[in-house]
Length: 92
Image 1 (cartoon, rainbow, N blue to C red):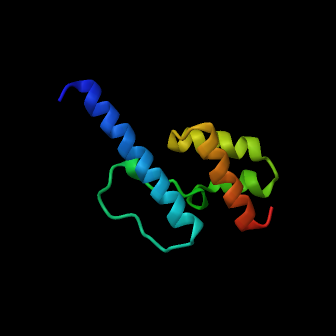
Image 2 (cartoon, one colour):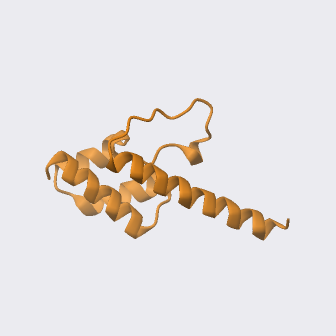
Image 3 (cartoon, rainbow, N blue to C red):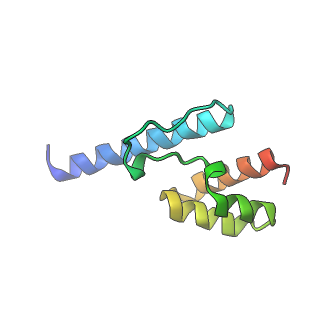
């Protein structure tokens, strides 16, 4: 396996994990992050990101999306979806 195959596999795995995190978050399934996972695999649940929550509460969606992207490395569409979901959960 050359290096480009490994990067592609890691990117696909990260995308799968992000989708699973979104499903878990959407349905409100309690799922504590297992001990020992590297930060790259950490939860992408915006409810665990105080700065994102605060931006949403203040009605600053663009800032929330930017903070979410910086924290998770998510793409724009994925970050917007996560922030929109959080806003709906918070009633904003």
